[in-house]
Length: 204
Image 1 (tube, rainbow, N blue to C red):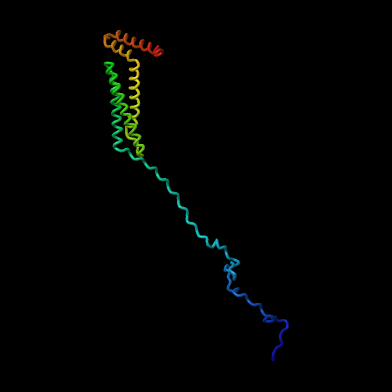
Image 2 (image 1 turned 120 degrees about the vertical axis):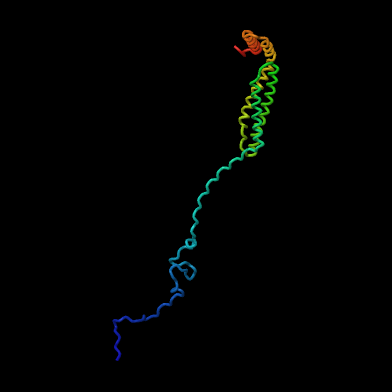
């Protein structure tokens, strides 16, 4: 005999049919694209997904040391050494000046030519080494300085002899016959007076 249904018990099935499920809804997971290709609710932006790790920065390169200039060629070294020898010969000629006035003038002229030649050799050796990107030849700077001095002194002495040749000629003739200190002092005073007369204000 069947028991009557309990009026207070909930029915096991709803009295109306359940709505149909959307296609693909059960297979959708968080972060997966939706049916229209839109990202899901928990899907991250595409740029963040495609971002790749950056390579570590490379350390800076150390500065390269400056290139050292090459030494001068042997030809330029020999040229500078020859210039120094010529300048020293010119200086020696000026030191030993003595004797006849005409001989002194000739020695000064030769000294001027030798000193100018040595100066030209020293200057050209330095300029050629600079154009070649090499270091300065040895002794070239010393030869240049001494060449300027000896050339300038020789030119100045020759100019003085050319301007006051008469006064120096009289002085040379006077000193040639001066055998005592008093006679030598008289010759010196005569030269001083003649130079002062030729150029006022030259001496006191």
